[in-house]
Length: 364
Image (cartoon, rainbow, N blue to C red; front, side, top):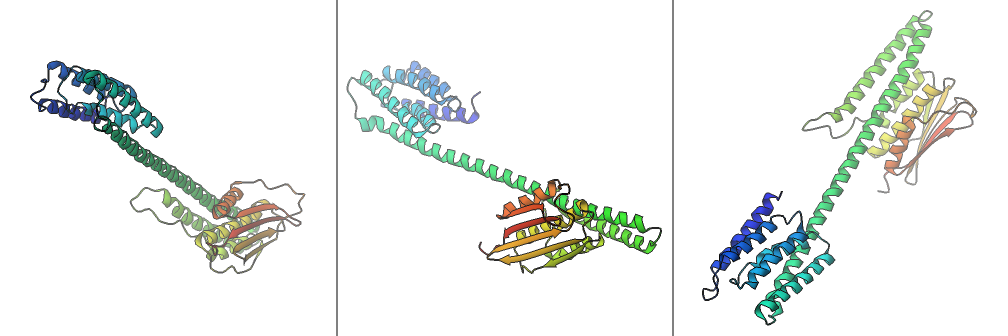
């Protein structure tokens, strides 16, 4: 079915053509019923211009040529052809638009020669075709540029949504993995000492309560980003080096001697959160996968625009079973790559080492 817009354009064009013919030179041949029928046929064809621009151009030119062949009043009937030419030129590439214009000129010239027997002035009779083609090419270029811009905007939005989804998934993983690991460890400690040292069991229960409370608070803050609302939180919950003491305390409560050396100073928000995530994930993995570990050494240094992070444990020789590359390490790699850095995790002489190199933002 033709669109309402095309029907309206065709009707207005036909009205202008008929009005121009009726108001034409009264000394010439009057507008006969056949002329109105031919204009009507071209108008009906023009209603389909958006769906079939090239066939419609041919369908409009035939009755328009017959209109002039039968010597009806000269006037704006050629406007029907102009609209069809413009439609084609605005929807094809510019070489095809120029070719279309040349074909229309040749067809129009042939009709003029057959009708008036003398070649008319090219500028007066064919200039409108060149102008129409140029206008169609310009409008088509603007339209295609706008469509391309809209597509690129949609792609950028889709990428941002995907990145936000991955970021929230990483945050949820970090909170759940770290908190549950500490809860499991403390529950084991409480169960082990409950009968002989009940005061230590009570302390373990308190640490479980605190870990669960912190996890719930962080999860609420993270999941708040998924709620619909007119004013969603602009930033995710802060997990930066200012909270590194919490990780150290959790590690020590799990029986690890966690030491931190180096002072990177103030860091950009993204780097700060990424360094914290690396340290927390490494300590959590030591608690989960290296039960014999007793020490975790964290080093954070800054040199020549780069942050160097190293987290090493003494969880056993390289010959022990390798740790599976879980979601946490993949998440760390994604975080580092987003900042232009990298993360490497591998067995070492005494245990397992996580190393990262990140830009510190000073070169931005």
